[in-house]
Image (cartoon, rainbow, N blue to C red; front, side, top):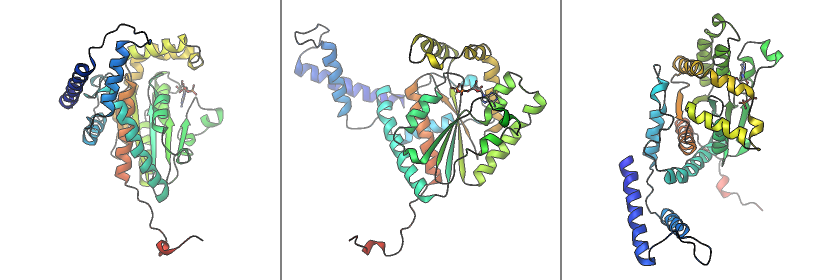
Length: 328
Ligand code: ADP
């Protein structure tokens, strides 16, 4: 909560002030050894953060955010602030995220060992919403042998010659695994709707087909968890501009991104209706604030952890009398 974080920051400030009394005032002047007072202050701040005894972000506080992000059937995207920070302190959140990912990794090991259930993460969002960055941050620390990432681009001719779920079903995770979809079957009610690739009479019935499909997966032991990375129009502008401006990001930019940007409102409407029509107990949607990467990463990791804990995987019982075996 803001109060607790505020209190921790105040405690840190007090301790920094104490250090300053001991070490003398810091100044921004450059010293003969080349360091500045500012650097000394920063180093002191980091030292205090590192040996800060109580963690300002408890599990309960993080899990409360999972509840807040869960979308219901009348979700208003406009009511979800892309800059939301849930009262989190940036330093605390950045330190906490890898710990949550560690929990996810521990649960993943059990999921794999048990080999009964699986988890499907669906990532959707406008261009530059941060799908790739989210995948990197969640994958970090997981055993790659148990995770499959699949990106869905424009369908091939062969894929178009089938129903829209044909190319999807093949990539759903097998027992014990986690699959991450970078775009998904939702494109068939998003880009397809906005760009009028097929008539409404074709895309509209797809909401029900999607609900049925995800229920089928859920019944077969796959938890489906869907994320809408909610970035603001201004943040998208900034990130697209950064892509154009930096030589090692330029390759990501497609002129088509600007066409999609011009259709911003249509996309928002399509996302909102897709989420409303397909958020279910078996396959809930989460609206994740996307403008701050550190909020996004922690919120997504916490949501994945929450769902893995619901699955509650257990290591299988070892073979009987194994404890007495001595390996020669
Ligand atoms: P990204 O832009 O995510 O890096 P790609 O360039 O490989 O990935 O492909 C994404 C493009 O494919 C997007 O423009 C997306 O709208 C389009 N796409 C994905 N699925 C479909 C679909 N079912 N029908 C039409 N276009 C699709």
